Length: 264
Image (tube, rainbow, N blue to C red; front, side, top):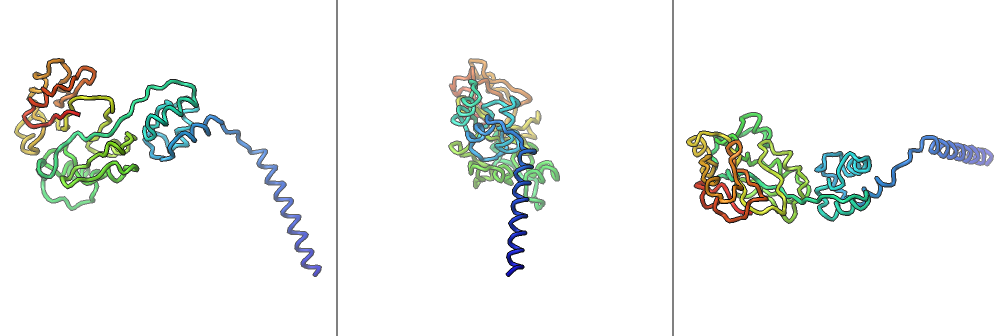
């Protein structure tokens, strides 16, 4: 009985001593947190997608509180989140909502394959090992790297071998854009209306372009000539639209011989 009581007394004494030490060291090593960071963090969706360029929502919240990131930088949260963070910071933000858009229509039916690719089944591996598994060096590789990184179920591979964006689900986080080794996915402002070019082939040789893809941009410039408001110009061989000028008339779309342009 004495041994039991002695053991209990020693255990209780150790517990008290350890509790005191824990409380003591907690005060010594206490790091005061910025309440603004906590408020910003509560306003974020918690997706930790990294689309803001920071390591998760915590990193973004700290960067905003420190003035190192814009209050509107959480693209995954959209307008509602941006407005909440702006309110916490007491600033007025220029909120621009975007979606990812694919600048390629080199599907299985249009883009000619080089042959059978049996390597690692990722777009990045195919790009590194063969430059392109299709005759067009700029074409979508169709192996779904972009789909794999999407955390919002907004991208799916279609039967045509191309990724398709569900714009209702897309948050514009940019993860798929960063992942694409061909740089074929781009940010598109939801408020912009007008023509968009579904091609990124910068080869100036028309016969080679059509040999690799039936619907590639052949750099003919007919879209540019057809535009009556000077809203479209060839930049590095690709039609680029000024959406502040574009009136969605469709003249450039009708003039394109390979159906590269379409109206959004």
